[in-house]
Image 1 (cartoon, rainbow, N blue to C red):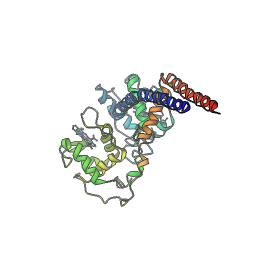
Image 2 (cartoon, rainbow, N blue to C red):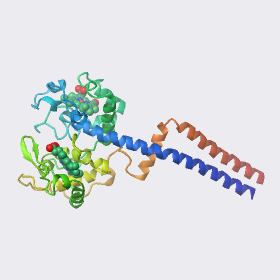
Image 3 (cartoon, helix red, strand yellow):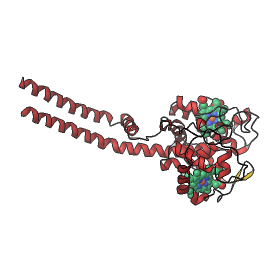
Image 4 (cartoon, rainbow, N blue to C red):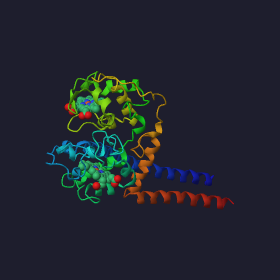
Length: 329
Ligand code: HEC
Ligand code: HEC
């Protein structure tokens, strides 16, 4: 009898410790995720156009590194944007801005570096550690550089296998789902036909349909992270998955574009696997949520204290159990 009540007592003590632990994790988790989410969206906008995001005047002249190439003849403020050198697909010379694209610079992408380098190393690169001319610290403060690093590390999406490089059409995907998302979130500003806001793109009149067809990677980045300086909705903040963005793109590619319609890539078929979603990205499921939470707690100062209390609780239960069974025997 005594033995049993000791077990019950020990288990309740353990449970109490777990409840305290959970109470500690939840605010940390929520805070961390909200903070990281905000950094990602802001970092993505800075990557698109940091001076429009910050609302400042761009530096005059060309970015010094721009002069190392002659293939891309653009000049002025545009040469200061991360995207002008590293691309909307984050792959630089190896991606959509490859040789012959009209945007070729020969500059590298950031996708590989983002996977292999730490956030601290990325911030250092943006301060000129590897190349003194790649120094943005005169224009971007530490908070902004950190947001850029967080975006690069945790939100870059490699869409190469989902877009046909010849036709620029989305491969696979669900146009019905895309239509639903578009009409829920986009049509009120862009119109059901995507023509309500008129664009100028590469010197010509364009609708949303045109943009979707001629530069799918740009469309995806803007759909996921918004357009700096506007109050456009941000897919990422709505909790959209990478595939949601591609579905909207697929649907938008069917809107009137003013272009002669090309044949669909012929690669319609298998849907991409769920697991392809955002490698290393923010929590998207319960399990990764818990892992993120544990990671967040592990880095927290209070962790040692909580762990200590927890271990003492567990030890307490074990000791009592052993003593209880010892008495019995
Ligand atoms: C004018 C072109 C240009 C602009 C603008 C530019 N970069 Fe770069 N970036 C380069 C080049 C060239 C390199 C290769 C190494 C070097 O020279 O620093 C590079 C390297 C990098 C790397 C490291 C890549 C690696 O493989 O090690 C990262 C990360 C990076 N840039 C991020 C950014 C971000 C973020 C911005 C915007 C704030 C930006 N770059 C703006 C040209 C540019
Ligand atoms: C609150 C109004 C609003 C909503 C809602 C909205 N947008 Fe936008 N969008 C804008 C504005 C304003 C611009 C910038 C127009 C310009 O550049 O002249 C823009 C620009 C864009 C661009 C970029 C054009 C470029 O420069 O490449 C894309 C792509 C786009 N929107 C897609 C979408 C999609 C997809 C949705 C739904 C998820 C959406 N927008 C929802 C207002 C909105």
